[in-house]
Length: 488
Image (cartoon, rainbow, N blue to C red; front, side, top):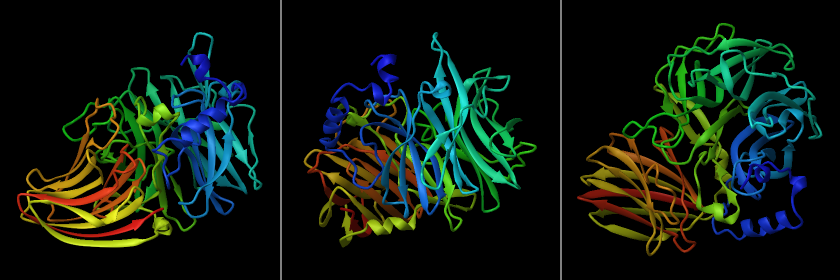
């Protein structure tokens, strides 16, 4: 697909083009049942996540003309409960002077009866050189969105390249602050801080000083918030080298935790960089506050520069379930929001002690469900769950008591992904009893380990009839106690 094809507006669509694409997408066997997904085309970063006027508002990056990154719109969905989402259509349409080649990622802030939407306007000149602008649009009480005519920040500050994007805005002490992802001229990543008294005029405060002088070539999608008397910075460093069982995806998503920052003197005292998700498909997380003060996170269940089997059907990617954040022992815990229980339908239970064999469960199966399992190791060298199983397909989740790892293996999960980054992910854990909470959808799984101590997210693409569930052990005994709720 040429740049001319990728950077078309919807108004440039050929007759019947979108209708024909929609038919292809709706015929896909891997359309999700309870995750946010695009009507057609490509979804990527969640944007503008916030609570306003009695509803959660969530936008996402959207390219309508197939599963490629090109002209990006903001697509808009709303919810009152974080699990049932209403399609509101296009939120921000690109194509003006300061977003001529896409409305790129950003955030939202409710203030004075309006929802302010901050985003990066992507433009390219005749030589295809990038010129980013930080832009503002405003939603009123009736849901009407109006773009401000001029940018609020018209260029990167001196010392930084045109990789300057993804504003995340918050309010503190009657002043507004924003963090933006950036790249220094020496091609290393960082985060910049701006401030404003009115959200229209912004001044550069400087680079957020961290202990990382050279940690990837670009930091995307920053998000700063305070939780449990700690400051937390989410960001996505691109260009990290894999380290044993860390940083195995093409690009990473993680956080730094430390003392709350003073944005007027931006220096961050923090601990180690921690990955947000130990699975295959997670990126560009964004958070917001619920009306009762909970910090809620949603991520893109996908990765840049990666092909997926749904590409052949004219669409790609979805968003994760919303996750409530908390801090325990210096770790950011992630738990699915309690509202996911609204999705529960029929309930089934299974309890088995398994000795060096595999037990196919008659009472538990399906392709869209929640499964909670308490696994108690009793001498087994390996014990776990095989799900979305069929004649030749299965996804494996197990605990290896010898190496002390929880392992997610999608080697035989169905239609193949590119294996540039492998088909196995591991999370180091030394435990005899482990809780596993799986959210399985038609083409994905989100796994919460030990009440959110770690999460493993993966897209999987099995056949429709690969819907079995089994418990297995090797080298000894393990006890499984499981509860399943169907979601469709």
